[in-house]
Image (cartoon, rainbow, N blue to C red; front, side):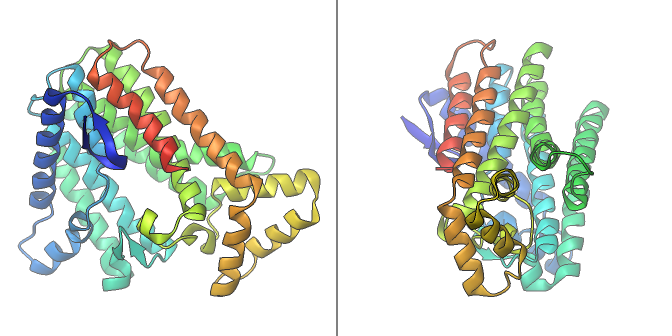
Amino acid sequence: MTVVGPFGLSVRDQALEADVQTGLAAVEAGLLDATKSDVPFITDAAQHLVLAGGKRFRPLLVMLAAQFGDPYAPGVVPSAVVVELTHLATLYHDDVMDEADVRRGVPSANTRWGNSIAVLTGDFLFARASHTLADLGPEAVRIQSEAFERLVTGQILETAGPTDGRDPVEHYLDVLGGKTGSLVAVSCRFGAMMSGAEESVVDILTQYGERLGVAFQLADDVLDIASDSHESGKTPGTDLREGIPTLPVLHLRAAAAAHGRPEDLELVALVDGDLSDDARHAEVLRRLRAHPALEQARRDTVRYAQEARAMLAPLPDGYAKAALAEMCDAVVHRAG
């Protein structure tokens, strides 16, 4: 048994391992090539997060989905580069919006160069992704543009918040479907599609990716509360400090509204207060870590991961299917 990709994913077949490792190495080279500029400063900024590493979750899914067709087809690696460049670009923008100080264990681009450079570098990466995408054909361009529209719509809806009368938890899960599920779904879709897999297989893997993407983001929500910076690669409680309503906080609010327990109401008041004070922020983190709302968010993560696994049932048995199923387990493990 060997280990590749994020979360220590194990691959139990040497041929599959070789395909995945070779594919990911080619993606890494493609990312470095795509982030080069004639202007050295732009290269430094664009490669900042590439060189910081990362899980390469989306490219790994492209490689595994491609196993249901021809994994050596010429469009597989470039499509993985496209989805990872798009993801990286959103991280530059997210860090500006969240005023984050750390990303992947290194100073965020906005901390190092300022907000304007960070935003423009994200735009540069979007442009490079589009350039690579154009070589994959009009259908790939359409699929990516629709996913990107969903991604941006999810970000806008998160910023705007739920409409009057809408359940905040349902609203948030819809947001995650757009913000995260859309690009993870495209990763699986591109891998299968570029490999020439049957249309029914492409559809199954797309739906799997959508659910896995939501589970992945819910695990991030749990990590934002439960982990330290060594585990997550970013400052714990970043979303909490910026007032971003992640699932544990939404479950806390729902419990406070439904039952009116004094301790819940007090914690909500602390969450809604000024968390720029480090001591207050640490106290809120401590209390949230002990609150049932965090465990409820973990259960939601498990539910979406199980739904993703169930989508794989019609696919032919094999090492690639087993690896995709293990991705679901890895996401759950990540959430504790």
